[in-house]
Each structure stands twice: as structure tokens, then as C-alpha cells.
Length: 507
Ligand code: ADP
Ligand code: MG
Image 1 (cartoon, rainbow, N blue to C red):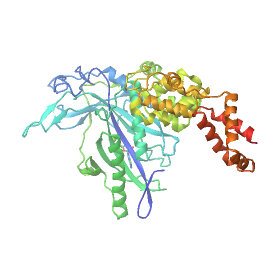
Image 2: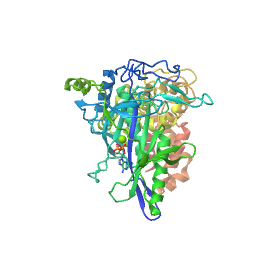
Image 3: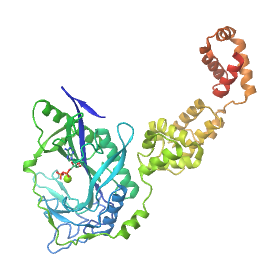
Image 4: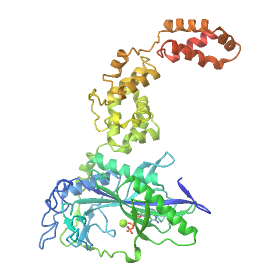
């Protein structure tokens, strides 16, 4: 369990995330304007009369965005509400000209209800993180204050684009239910899992750097062993895994210090400073905005049929949790290895392609990927799970390369040491498949017992003194003999065969 040492006691963390993902769709949630507002698009060129709230304009719900929300809901193992509603959340700020945001209020059933995602907990075991809800709402535009000394500009391209807000659940009625995020690392793994589910489903790019995924981070602390939930603070609009982890840790330490000095934490909304990694109060709950939700009279209640839900369910691709389960079940991978190989869909596709090449070698392929390839991200194109063997000087190691290399070890064509050498040559830009490289550099392994035996005989004759010592009980010298044989064969001998012959000869 992740804890922070205080002066008197150790403290544990309770974390709740409200994650916004931008929904992929051609048009906005309630208008026909393009939802592809990428930064190269000129300001205010993808704006409809609805987005800027011209009088008399009526919003029309985009059914595709609804389907996207249902897809994500199913990906979160959640209940999909057959009936839900939209309401106006009062919000008076120039980036949303309506003067309110159309959202789904907390008091009403949202489109996506209770669910869960599975992450790897800090103990290396699978952990369920409960989801309270996910709802659709409009995004706001962008204000630019740095273009002109006395004027601010508004870009409404993003105004009205669909967001899905996913909120984690805290079971306050059953405090022993610990299916919530309880460390900075778990927060990161949760967000990565959400990202990969969204990407696998094509629901969102869920890219923090591009702003298509952002999170509000709720944190509280309590002494280890206690199961009360103390007052939490909320740090708004976080856009990087690194900053989120740093904000959680800073905020937890800040709260611990307050408690240890006899104070109380107040339920504030915090702002995080990227410059120094600190959090500070932005507004207190007392000045919290009164959203005054009220039903949007322009929109009918949202009715979703059972058939629609079932149609979407039957078209769901394999999601990361199912992929992990498959790796553990079919290939005997550990929980940890399965988690590493499903960090992104591109990685799992790469692994799947390699295994398709050599189905019997899944486990060593996984080991090589995690211990060797992950250390050289520049040398393998995780996005390109398709084989494109030799790509000029910037050598890309392909799934079939790795499958072949691993298979050559398994079939005794080369030994582990030679495999490493071939691997390094590939990293250095050597072209051709591992077998081509082995041929070119004469790296065939010697497994022929007769050939090895003659080298062994030679070594034994040359090292009579060591042979005596070995025979009188210094069996630790075996390594010395193995080393000598390997050296004499230029590292080409099969170590298992060498060991066997040496033992026989020396006994
Ligand atoms: P609000 O309506 O004020 O935003 P919510 O009930 O929607 O509050 O909760 C927002 C997030 O904060 C949820 O993810 C929830 O699990 C989390 N949360 C609630 N109470 C606590 C607490 N005591 N400590 C940490 N997180 C909390
Ligand atoms: Mg909330």
C-alpha cells in the first residue's frame, strides 16, 4: 500500500478522478459544425449559429455521440441508462456564449451509470476501480489573452464539441470497499487504462498533450488503518500524467501537514503550478459556483433502446482487460508482463503479430519485448505492427524479426549470447532478418556433440591442474571450464551441451 510518512503516523491516500475525454465525431454534440477543431484550423471557422447561441437556434442531439458514449460505457463495464436527460448548467463565461453548458446533472441518471475498470494495483495484482457515472456535455471555446495588449479573443471552434466525463466512485457507505485509486501510480495506470479503452473503441483520441483528455483530481488523506473519508480538495484541469502524480503527492503532503499541525482541511478547489509542482487554493467551496441546473426545454429526454445497446455490444473489439486475461491464460504470462504488453493497443498488436509468426514462442517473445525492446523505443515502430523488415539505416525491429530471433534460440540454432549480439547489430542498423545476420557473421551455434567434445578434450588436457582440483571436490570450477570452452569456440557452443559433456568427462 502506498503511504506517506508523517511526523506521528503514516497516511494513506484516497483519490477520485473526473476524467474528460473529447468524443470523436464528425460534428459537435448539438450542431452540425465540424468537431475536428485541431490547432491548424483558423479560429472561428467551425462554428454554427447554435454554438454561438444565436436567438431562436435549436440544438439537435448528435446520435453518433450518443453511440460513442454507449460504447465507452460498455467498455467501462457499466450500466447504460435507457432514459437520461440533459440540463443547463449555468456558466457565465465568454468561452461558452449560451451562458450555460448543456450537461447531464448529477441528480438525474447519466447516460452511463455504475461500472468499473481493472488496473494493476500497486501490489502487482489486478484491482477494480469503480466508476460512478459518465455523462455527455459540451466543451467550451478557447479564450486568447496574449494576442493583443488590451483585447481578448475568443475562438469558438471547440465550443459545443462533445465531452464524456467519467467519474470514479467512492463507496462511502461501505468504507471497507477499497476499489478506488489510492496512489499516484494507480492514478496514472487508471488514466492510461481509460485512454486505451477509449482508443481501442475509437471513442476518443484521449491524448493529454493535445487536450483531448483532461482530469480533475480529488484527493484526501487519512491515517493508515482508519476507514473514514476525510475532506478532499479538487485540483482542476490537469493535462499530463506527470503533473497529475506530482499534484496528488504535493496535495497529500500539504493536507498531512495541516492535520499534523492540528488544523482542518477545507474543501477547496486547487490550482496546480507546473513551474514549481505546488497546489494552491483557487476558490473555496463557500464561493463555489451555484450551477442552478435546470432541464433543457429544447431537448427531449434521451431514450435508448435495448436493441441499440445490444447492437453496439455485439460489435465491441477486445479491450485491454480481456487481452491481459488472454495473455495470462493462453501464454502463461504473469500479471505484470500482461500489464506491460497492454499498456497501449499498439504494443499488444505488435506482440500479437510476433506471436502469430511463432505461436509456440509467446513467452520468450514477451520477455524479450519487455526486457530488451522497451529499452529501445526508437528501434521499433509500435504504431506499425505490420512487417516492413528493412527500413534503410533507421533499422526498425519488426514483430517477425523478434519472433525469428527467439525461435532460433529455442531451436538451438543460436545461443542466448549470440541472440544478444544479433539484437545489438539490428539496433545498430544492420539490415536483414536475424537469420540473415547470423549467416553473414557466422553465428551458428555449435550443438554437434562430437565437435564440442573434441574442444572439451583439448581444454581438459591443457588444464590438468584445474582438473585435479575439480576432481578433489572444487566443483565450482565447472564455470571455469565452461568459460574456456565457450572462448575456444568463439562463443558459439551450445552452453547446455557444453555443461553436459564437461560434467560427464570430469566425473
Ligand atoms: P462534486 O459533485 O463535488 O464534484 P462528486 O461526488 O462528483 O463531487 O465527486 C467527485 C470525485 O471526488 C469523485 O471521483 C469522488 O469519488 C471523489 N471523492 C469524493 N469524496 C472524496 C474523498 N473524501 N476523498 C477523495 N476523493 C473523493
Ligand atoms: Mg463532480
